[in-house]
Length: 327
Picture 1 (cartoon, rainbow, N blue to C red):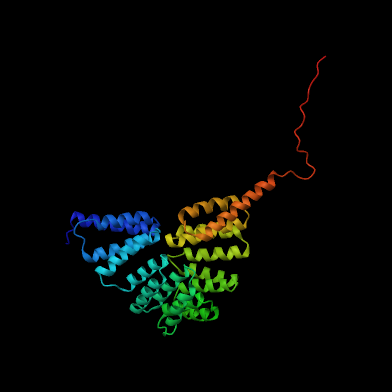
Picture 2 (tube, rainbow, N blue to C red):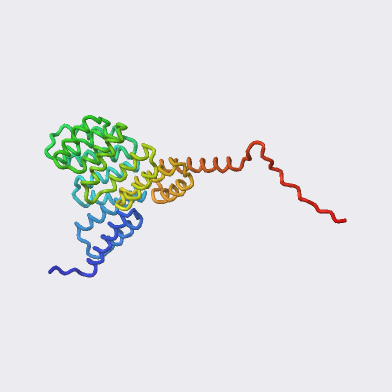
């Protein structure tokens, strides 16, 4: 039986707490936990590498790119870099608007790990900054490889979807589904929805929910999007509620945003505004949500102004007091 010293037990506990906080969106708390773990005595080199990478990830998500880059530089100087560390450094550089450094690290990452997952990760990193063109070349490169299994066909379908080549996306995802990929059903729902075929999209999302045992939030969110497009906002809210019950931290953001949209569409501006305020507290960097909050605020102000204007012909003068005379 392996014995653990108290410092090792505490370090593992702090590492676990940091990972849990990272997944829950408490990024500053995660940074603090990883920092405490790193401060423990006798931290093995491999464990230190792991903690530095986790802390850099938390710092990046917490909006601390300079701190994250400092940890990435430590990793580069003290350890052998791998694809994941190059990718992390590229993401940090991108957040700092250091585009050449980001491109260099992404190229290194893809050189170390030229697969569908890495190509998609790099594309999504660029996409999050509005730089899809820079990421598309990685998608085009990986599409030149031959698919070998259901997962490959599924990833190819996802890539074609990102490239808005919906016919090829459908073909690849149908092959993936025929080979047993459940995820392909959800992606087919996305493709059908992008083609404005909500009936087919709804069918695919329902098939996904029937087949998927654990990650059901994605399917409920897809159904909610179909409901919103079809004008059935009560059904959308019901599906969002079901999705939130099944969602992990990453899946929750899109569901919460769509909840705001559903309330807005059914003209419940006050509830939408309240939900948007809560959302901004959780996701302060979401610029689209900030615009939505401003729009809702203006609509509520407009409604209040309209309510305060008297109807035409209505006498707004206060009634004169009635005076009784004795005598």
